[in-house]
Amino acid sequence: MSKLVIVGTVAFDAIETPFGKTDKILGGAATYIGLSASQFNVDAAAVSVVGGDFPQEYLDLLTDRTINIDGVEIVKDGKTFFWSGKYHNDMNSRDTLVTELNVLETFNPIVPDAYKDAEIVMLGNLHPLVQLGVLEQMTKKPKLAILDTMDFWMNIALDDLKNVISKIDVITINDEEARQLSGEYSLVNAAKKIHAMGPKYVVIKKGEHGALLFHDNDMFYAPALPLAEVFDPTGAGDTFAGGFAGYLAKSGDISFENMKKAVIYGSTLASFCVEKFGTERMVNLKPEDVKTRLKQFKKLTQFDIELN
Amino acid sequence: MSKLVIVGTVAFDAIETPFGKTDKILGGAATYIGLSASQFNVDAAAVSVVGGDFPQEYLDLLTDRTINIDGVEIVKDGKTFFWSGKYHNDMNSRDTLVTELNVLETFNPIVPDAYKDAEIVMLGNLHPLVQLGVLEQMTKKPKLAILDTMDFWMNIALDDLKNVISKIDVITINDEEARQLSGEYSLVNAAKKIHAMGPKYVVIKKGEHGALLFHDNDMFYAPALPLAEVFDPTGAGDTFAGGFAGYLAKSGDISFENMKKAVIYGSTLASFCVEKFGTERMVNLKPEDVKTRLKQFKKLTQFDIELN
Image 1 (tube, each protein chain N blue to C red):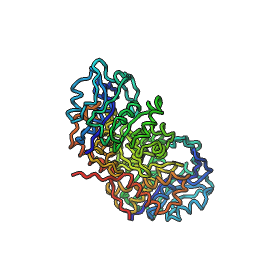
Image 2 (cartoon, one colour):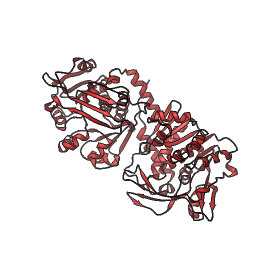
Image 3 (cartoon, rainbow over the protein chains, first blue to last red):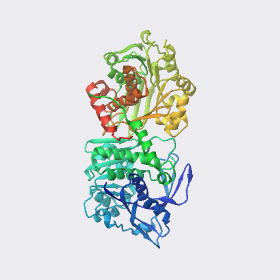
Image 4 (cartoon, rainbow over the protein chains, first blue to last red):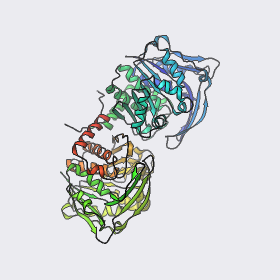
């Protein structure tokens, strides 16, 4: 088992979908990544910041799952990062209604000493300078640094983003963002250009169409489980990343063969995330549920054509 | 080996893509289906109609591959069906520039006597009454009737379409059309509604995102091979259907397990079709090429997670 550092927001979200709407509920990239990775009983630490308004019971959700929160700074007189969004009917696009950075504006991440030698670092979606700041605190070069990002940072901090991308091993990025970052429409060509920016592994997330893993000339494809109802897509990408990083941390094996399995675990865990609002499904997820769904993924994708 | 009847257009196409444009070249659903199915050395007959302007060498392309063309009527003083289209930059959408039905307007399909007992019937995209006319000529109920259609018929002949759909076993349809036909956005729910219209098997084609096979509560997913360049998508859906039908005809096994393989073969053959303009790649396709690409599909999708 490898130690895992998870960096990202711990936040309040208010979500509206065609199925209903929520008040402020638990959200944030590090939250989803942590809940997902915790399915593998990893030795993980979250690095984030919240305000004095953040309920202890939300933090307990992480510590109950043995996610160390020594690196989650609590700014007593500050307010927690708040995001509110509304999904369109197709659930593939959304409008951001509110973004209040609050304590995130001056966030200076601090990796707990006991995790500065972690083998795996999962840099959730945040300003690239914050992501870089975490990497620079590691006393030992991590075996695997994974970075998630979004178009927002390409628009306002492209040079910083390219700099941190040049220092990591795996990037997870959605299809439109991969096209924006590379200037290539074909995802195969986009992955090649992003490889050339640094990462040996490129994971392109296609939402309901699954995810592609690229490495040199190898490709692997994990579908998303086709679902009768997607209730709330919030956090699905982070849950995917958490499953991916968590499985790699647990197995300690970062070969391409094992990374394929990590992508399948990521897809499997993300398929739960969208079944309920916010973190609800992930908080109540049992190992048996995961095993049952993995069997469905095998049935969905495995075939038996003999080639000699 | 089962006998296979293929119904569809044999046509002239003129195609414009971001990569170039063609004059009138060989096209048509039955052409693509036939070329694709011929990879399995099936005992197949094409049922279609062309005009006196149709070159013998195009017909020879089918007979050279042992596709019987006794059922391809030649209307000496008529003109062959002509379609012209222009693809947008994303290659996922296109505008139809010209549709000249010509001999198709009065097409009355005739299944050759020797194929009226065929076990497998592939009804390519045509007016649902023509598709029905072919089914009614079969002297023995086919083991498997497969139907492909498009939104055009939903818009102008929905009742006829629903009638023929109620009589077939497998429908192949693209995602947007499945949504239109069922009134359901989720493809899982769309497949359920279409099941209820008659077909025991529903294949939803998602273009670059692959294809889903539904049967009762079983699902199987075949990705499309991610390609650096899609040169011309024309005929990819028909090529998919031809590979699907051809493999089933060759193996004579219509179990769900075997249908999974048929979907993979369909996806594999379609991945060649888009590499060149029109039928060019399919005409020059060698069995070794298919085998090599099937290996790529296995690498792309197969993983090894043990579950007990």
